Amino acid sequence: MRIATILSTFGVLFLAELGDKTQLTVLSLISGGRDRWSVIIGASAALIASTVLAAVFGEGLLRVVDERWLKLGSGLLLLGFGIFVLLDAARAFRT
Image 1 (cartoon, helix red, strand yellow):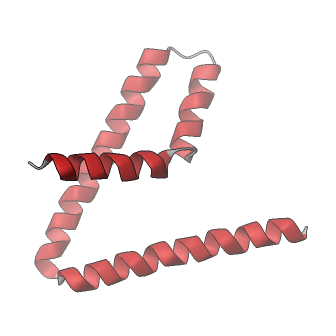
Image 2: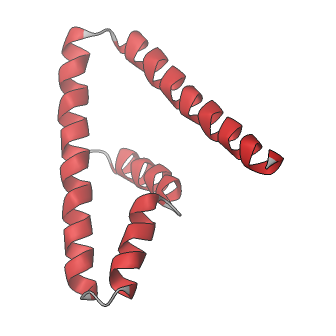
């Protein structure tokens, strides 16, 4: 286990998740009168479960697909999401 990898992963994901729909959902659940600690535990468990699934799936995929192709595919996918968000924002400004 490498502390540098842990810290860089935490930093990147923490910044990526700020203002995310998960955070807004937690805010909504707590402001709706639900118990704060129950929501925190439930949300944390869900994020851990989805992260474990992604890590296991990614590790399995590495056994079948060359790492260079996975990096290219991931980059293109993220680029596509970014373009989609930019186009959606541009449409919102036109109306």
